Length: 564
Image 1 (cartoon, helix red, strand yellow):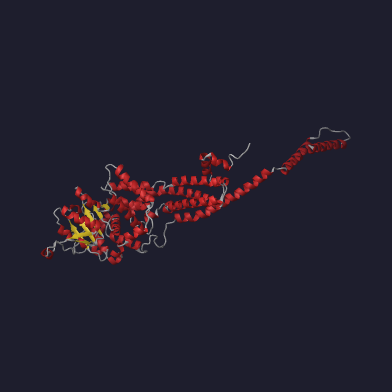
Image 2 (cartoon, rainbow, N blue to C red):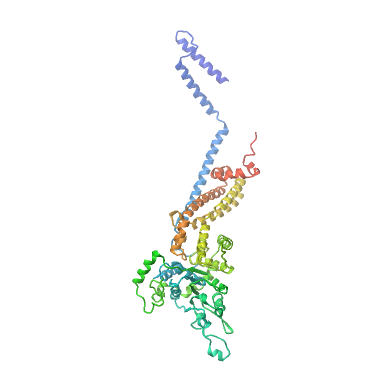
């Protein structure tokens, strides 16, 4: 009030002075210019007064806002530092000369690639069968080649023995009238003289390392029992003795599926199966040109098939391939010990069998033995690829394992591709992160609670980092995990990449955003950041927490603490 009165007095004196200078007459109304000047002066004085008396709370708020901005920028900067190396690793091709994580010999993968090229030499459109042949040998399992005559089934079986240096090879064509002596050897005359029912097995199936049996489903009941024991247990009953069979892999060929139920057990012994088709129209010219320009070895005309481009067993050098029987031995046992099978892969196989047996028409029967052996096969695939864990991409091999009729192979493959293209657990991680954010808000910067929660955030970060690395190369349009896979043929890998590539690019972008959110929460917990700053860093999770969280959790954060 005193200030206002003084201001009025000053204004009155000014008016009187002006009037006195103009002849002693007092002017009660100043000129227009004087009015404007006085208004400006009064406005400036008012501003100075307001600045001088700004409330303390407003000053403190400004200072607090500055501190919040500093903390927010510090968290974001640290997140960028942590995120950059993860994305660089996940986006690369995964190349480099590093030791296999599985503990496999460093040169094993190179030997397998060399052997694959050697087996493919002179053949057209047989990349898949060649890889299945080698994989069966490494797993100690057997391969069935099903298809019409003249599609190089016999040639593939012979070539396996050619790359296994020092391996004894046995080959036989069965008919409905074949007798056990054709497979297991003739009875020993000396043994009969001594009242012993034994066979001379040298040079027959019981002493073979690699075997090829054509028209395998022509086997009769007199042959089946002994053949099943050899295939599954690697044992042969010779008289009153049970001898071990050194069989590495048996390749069976047939023009047709088994017709009688008594052959179902034999059919199930072939873990890997492939339907061998004629060369496609697009590659037929390549096959004929290759055949026209080749010179066949003497005496090979009778054994070559229409799928063979002229490369026979005699033309393959074991020295060039570099594989021996010792390279195959022990791989399965080493894989069992060194390779883990993640829960996601187990769930995939369980769901796949449920789909095949419950939702397919007609149902596709998959035996328990086949499923158990499938796990061993996936372990070997991961081990030879240099990994210590089975990848979901390895499950694409199950398209050659879990069918009963050739037409079902595409059903299995399509189901696996659809499963691989799903969100890869993004929704589950988002749910876990939302719960973790709510608990972090309740911790309210407490150092002990924040440290405990930070460990959980680090676990989520590792999961997401692993997922991003498994999708390496998707943003550039390639999938190295498929392209560099030892056991997926180039055409198979290319088809899968074309299907999964665009979908994985979208999934990867979602994973990267989610990883940034997890890192933000982890860094905030590391710095004991208060809830109101975390609300600015992760507004979506804050809104969800406020909207769905119990009022008891929200009140301590300031909503219920305000007094009227």
